[in-house]
Length: 414
Image (cartoon, rainbow, N blue to C red; front, side, top):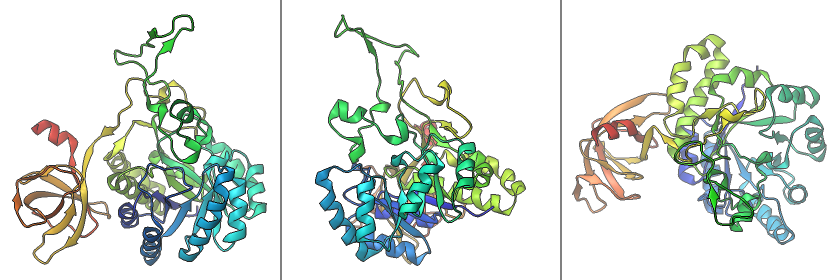
């Protein structure tokens, strides 16, 4: 079996650094236009250039999304955007629209093109079509089974790569092509502005009785009829590799650095263990299961890989995430006295027991010994998000280490 690429999302330069530190072979990012995550922080051209430089220094590739379904008004802007990207040289562009594809071929022929899952890539004929036009990789539709992926691999040239989502949020609509957001709010999911109406609570209204809402009872809180569980294939890595998938893609360009670190670190080890031996992979299964939930999740499903999902793939009683750990921030510059800079993400206090999450798989317990403000004043806690602090722990972290605290431990103490 060939070693698959581990492809990790990044919403910002900070999260890109985390992805690189925690095991990504490649990172996919979005610019400030023409990607399908308009509400993500996204990258300015300057940040994109710095991110590409940092990633390439570590041997990590960077792919840029340009996967909107374009309208006439978008095309000239796309052309100019690609001219700008030519100067900073990402490793590939992720595209779904044939018109955008042709502009990329004309303006940046030296940059690889990967065909987005938004293009509904469900059969080997489609893969061959894009290959003949010059695409290097096609991202499979989420609606494909492992058997269908094996058939695609058998019918396409070896140099044409298959990329497949193996972890993250699932979409209620076919290959992510949703009209609900546009219908309800005027924000077009296919232009990057999805408001995620699939996670909302719904009721039924009979036509002759307007305004009289009839709840569909799943429990006393109502029903969330479109709310899918998250995809997680950590227990099935050998099956994915044997199907001939070249790139394992993690969903989540809206997610935190903690999510990226937890999933990337776990999948990295699972892939490496599997390459060593099936026995090594199975021996660490309990560790994978424990670690993969130490971020935000919605319960897990294997999606379409082993057949069409049934009713158990949905969550009917709520639309909230499960949260095993709380993200405190990533350690910045470490000073000679062992203290370090931190831009805080969630509240923590002096005396609290937290955890330093290391890229190599270790989790180091540490006690918060001191918190200093930017002005050097001591604080008993850091209650306000994005505070810039100097922190001292009983076990100093290294720059880039993720700091987290167990949500369960806080609840017990609270």
